[in-house]
Length: 208
Image 1 (cartoon, helix red, strand yellow):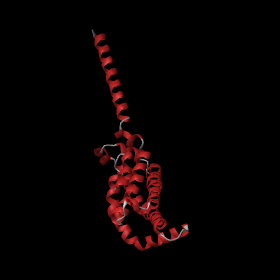
Image 2 (cartoon, rainbow, N blue to C red):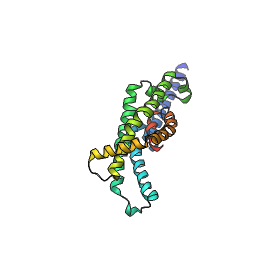
Image 3 (cartoon, rainbow, N blue to C red):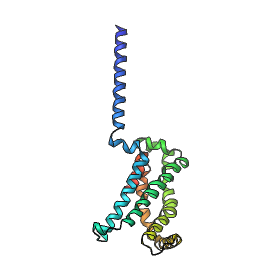
């Protein structure tokens, strides 16, 4: 009798394990699992699509252009910026390099919110990520690149040196307002971004 019970229990456990495996396989193949299964490709798509849509909205809403009047060359430049810088370079900084610089990142990202609050080392590293973004990445990498791309799009020169010189010059003129707006926007959003699960961090950043 005892052996029969044990055999029944074993069969039940095996069936439960197979069902769990089938559910996990089905879940991983669903559309909702794409961000987690393909985090780099998904966030790259979000960054590219969002940048293209933002420029299209500016041209059609702010500048009053019809669809036939849209400057698709300009839109294409912003597509490249969204893909290469926002989706590519920022991933390299905020995932690849942050993983090296802040060793608790992966472990901290997997914790529940309640467990994150107890993880002092993870909280300190998340704070360091915020500080690096606000005081190194955004003022010294993002803004100079953004202004240079704007000069490429709207400037009169075809000399890349002029794009950089004119772009950085305009950034210098606007730096006080830009940095104040940066802290107001990216300060709070970074505090959210760097406690999210890893596969959601960059998509969240792209839609802010």
